[in-house]
Length: 180
Image (cartoon, rainbow, N blue to C red; front, side):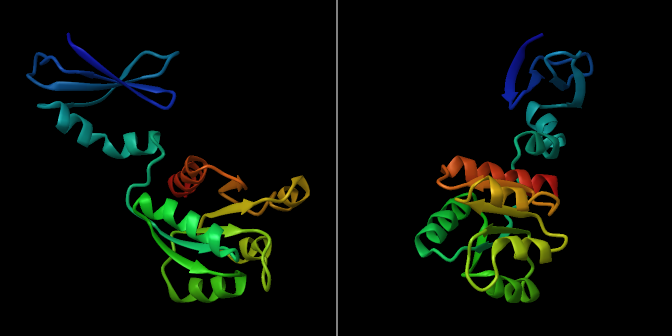
């Protein structure tokens, strides 16, 4: 047998690139403490991987398709940074400067995810999160533990604390999209 190992997060995907008795390629998933389980058998490694693409995408926390994100942020500079990060991942981003604008856009657009600052004028992010139904919300804040305590029980999919790195924001968005 001839194997190619791919580490995906804490998972190991093993591709047996030698032909098996059926003349196919076998793709295994192995966990560090379990025996490997067969994920797919196909004539080529590419076909084997494509058979389990959705599962691999989930393991990588990569959304299956680009999402339409409503970014709610009153600071123009912070909004531009977050917008650029999301667009680089292929997402479409709609902007709102506060929760009131966000509620209007939620009523008139198909939105896959709300990415909101918590401290804003007119309608803050905590109140907005309470009003959003059936759409994952990622909360972004520079606030301390008292504000984060307010988020408990609101169904916030992920939290990001400012200042954040691009990868931190990407991970929070991916997590929220995959989990919903």
